[in-house]
Every structure is written in C-alpha cells, then in structure tokens.
Image 1 (cartoon, helix red, strand yellow):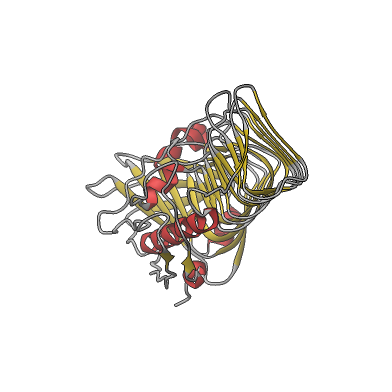
Image 2 (cartoon, helix red, strand yellow):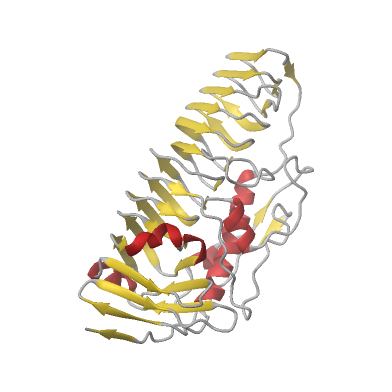
Length: 372
C-alpha cells in the first residue's frame, strides 16, 4: 500500500501570541475549506484572482486575493509563510506575511497587516480601520493611509502614516506564525483526504464516447460516493460530465492511480453543473503529482501532494502543494457533508505549539462502470 504524499509532514514547533484575528480554537477540515478559497503547503505564482481568503505555506509571486470579500473576516485575507514578490493586491481585511515583501503590495480594504520585513513597497489603505506592523527592518517603502505604521527594526527606506496615523518604532509581535498555520491546515486536510479515500463507493458512472454520466445513488445521509480508478487515463479519455444527482446532497469523488500520475483535465461540465453543483462536489485526488486544469472545473479539490496549473476557472476551494494560477478561483461555500463514519479531523488548535505529521492509509475499491 502506497503512503499518501502527505505522510512525510514533519514536526513543526512555534511560539504563539494571543491571536488578533480569532481565538485559538479548534477548526475542522470542512471549516478550513469554507474559511479559505486557497490553501497550499508550497509556492503560488499567480496572474489572476481568488475570490476568498488564501493560506499559503511557501512564497507568493503576484495575484489578487479576496477580491470579492466573500470569506470569514476571522482570518486574514492573505496569509503567507514565505516571501512576497511581484504585484499583489488584497481586498479582504487583514494580512500576515512571514517573510520579506520585495514586490509591490496594495492592501485595498485595510485591516491589520503584519509583515516580517519590507524591501519593496507596501501600501495599506486602512482608512481608519487597521495598521501596518513590520517585525524587522524596512529598506523599501511602507505607507499606511488612515492608520499607524509600526516597525520593530531599522528603517533605511521610507515609512509613512498619512491622515490620522502615526509612525512608531517599537517591538512588534505577530498574532500567529503563518508558516505553521499553513502546515497545520495542510496536515488536517491531508488526514481528511486519507479518511475520505477509505469510504466505500455507492454510485457508478457510465461512459458513452467521451461523455461521462455520473449516476448518484446516495445513502440515507444524502451522500453519493464515486471511485475513479486509473484517474490519469480516465481524465485523458473523457471530455464531458453529466450528473444525475437524484436525492444526493453531497457528492464525493475519490480519484486513484497505481503510479505517479500527471492529469490534464479539460472537461465540459454540462448544463452549467460546474457552478450549479459546485457547493456539493468534493474531488479527492489521492495520488496525483500534477493537475493541469484547462477548462472550468466544478467543486472543491483536495490535492495535497500535487502541483496544480490552472488555465480554467475553479468553482470551489483548492487545497494543493503548489499553484501556478492563470484563471480565477471562485468562492463556492461548501455544503458537502462528510461520511458519518469518517471523523472529520480537527486541526487541534490551529496555531498550537506542536504540529505532528501522520501516516496516511487509503483503501482502493473497484469502480463499477459500463462503456457504451
């Protein structure tokens, strides 16, 4: 049995101050998928936008985040474990950058921004609702309109606080460690993915030419489960999805492969189902090395060990290893209800002192399908 790609997540230790955005409370996997529109353990390169909040474990190069202010303000609009470069914009309130900002960052809707250091340009349009705090040194430009600018290190650049704000040089404590927060979220979702992969399937699909028809036969809880074996071959051979959902209120797709796999996904979700069914669809890619999505894709995606490239919009939350984003990710708050037999893993305390790795197990069952 092959281990999940997330099985090698190691121990992360952090020191945490009292949270500014929310108390340190338990948060489960489904809450993470609803609080965030994007979660990655690694880097993000973006030329497009994300509707909701983003939690990124690595570096960020470009992109626009929480552009429709759709998500819970209890977490920042953008949380980045590493560095930020390129041109980046946020609209939702709040930001936490664990590394250096060497690019150009514009915070349009204010909120409290925490940044480790600035060698580029940061402009926070706080308008009386927020401040900008730099833990270390400023060698670039930090400007807060309508709020305070605080820095804890040395200023060899330009530091401003326009309007009613002031510039303050004093030690800065961040509300939480962003890299550890991302690691904990990925750990939690990885466990969730492994547990979902062991759920018995109860629904089947048929293939006619390149059209797949998913025929849901949900259990008494309204959950329909499809298993797709040899996923790479499956997605390479089909081009249309149709859904007979019946009484299903949640639909899970477990996608398996026997070998390391690369997916090129260019599928037309018929009858506007990519949008209309997005809130009840959850795709669990257990083995994919890479996903290349070239057309509109409906439903949230768990692909924790996967490098994802998008040239088509995703309708739902994406959780992945890395992302090269060339199309939008739209917030579709999930109404998916996990199997009652699967304990939804909680991220203990989301910013707790120690985050432990795990070994993932999955059970692969045969998919019944008919080819016409």
